[in-house]
Length: 617
Ligand code: ADP
Image (tube, rainbow, N blue to C red):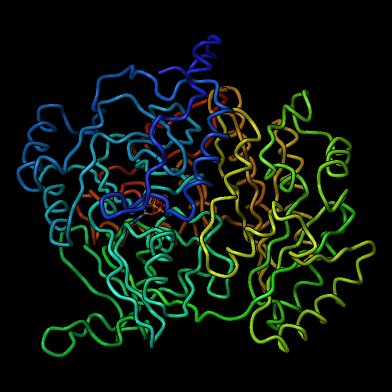
């Protein structure tokens, strides 16, 4: 299928109209909806995004549907799907044979990557199946083994920027766990823990915790619509002191690629009279090897339940510091390191570039500037002066301190004095800034309340999508300079604005470069692909590797971890072949291909100068 063409005026107007129904509310029959408290925000957010669309909401399919996975002919596929319908009920199996609809964050598809970098029809499933229990997940896995059918589990499929709900291998059957397995199974106010099924969003967990009245926080990432479980096993992060989600999970239940059901941690030891073990959510380790790690960012099992620690609510104070010069970042990071190591900074703070403060105002870039290529620094400077309450600045630091007032005051005094060494810095509290300022969204995120505001920078270009380039570097000014200069110069080369954010811990930082592009612009998509490949390779030469990446770059990123002639990848492949001898579970995810597919051209190892990578998807 070709990239949708620019439309006539009438078509543009039709495309701009959001769906007639209101965004769905979170309810028993809509696990992925928005809580009532955010409904108005969602309505406005959606209207803004649709006002920046120039292509129709859906496009006709150009290829025979459903798209088949490799090695499965249509007759076998139809036979297999008939059997799946008998096993799970016809209402729980859906063919992916209708027009593909990108939707938007709160009404996202489970058929393809809504933020397509390649063509919309490239990263697609053949069908979706909705299990209602761990036993049904096991049934699906056994069915997949019988037909050698690749399956791809998702929890919510809102992994936007990293591939969304799409399977890595084209034509795989998506196992959408969230639709029918979406309960908060337990909230324990004494031990401050919970247990969730795959379809529990941060929004939902937050609402359920509120209902209990326990003074507990969840730890949301920038947007609250993703699932707690999916985010955690893809090693997403949040911003309270519990922001390392994987480090705060406690106990898994999973289905192995053979269909066997396993519990990890203390859950492996049955509780009295068949009850769950009473310490399953309290102690992370079982006796023997600690196996949880191999089920994150991998394709070794389907997680059906997960324990998570919740943070006891506490007093908190968010603040913001602005810095005037582009070159200040080295000094800022040198200041952050000891503060973070000594835990004077209460959370993983963000150091954002001024362009993000402008983008999050939700005004399209074309209203500010009509040129092509990256926006010139002088234009940005003039815009910041005109539109930001903080005026012209280069870097904005968002931090939060926690605990009783005396503790916070003493931490704040140290932090202020430390940042005071940067000439021209300015310090702000939320009360110093207008009620519409982005800081109020950070206050919520950093104190356990999921949010939606971060979507607003998706209005920067028409039909906007984004992906992230996210390398890890030491928390050191000189490393910050290497990675920042590399990213900035390559963004210039490929013609994109650079949206850098550092999430800074004491020993390492995540540099998050957000690439925002127009999904209807084939050339922009080709350039995203070229830019990503070049950044991954250039960063790896400096010793910096991505912590997480989009489906299309998982092969190359996995290979940058190549010590010992790809010893780590070989270990993953050995595990894969032992656990999944038929290679049915998420082939290619995290760069791990089962024996059946290896070396047949499915790996994407380089960017060709086209919009689509050369390899088979
Ligand atoms: P979110 O729930 O945050 O929207 P996804 O459901 O998209 O996240 O999950 C992110 C990725 O993690 C998926 O693409 C999939 O590869 C993997 N994943 C998600 N849920 C599971 C699960 N329950 N078991 C195994 N892998 C999963």
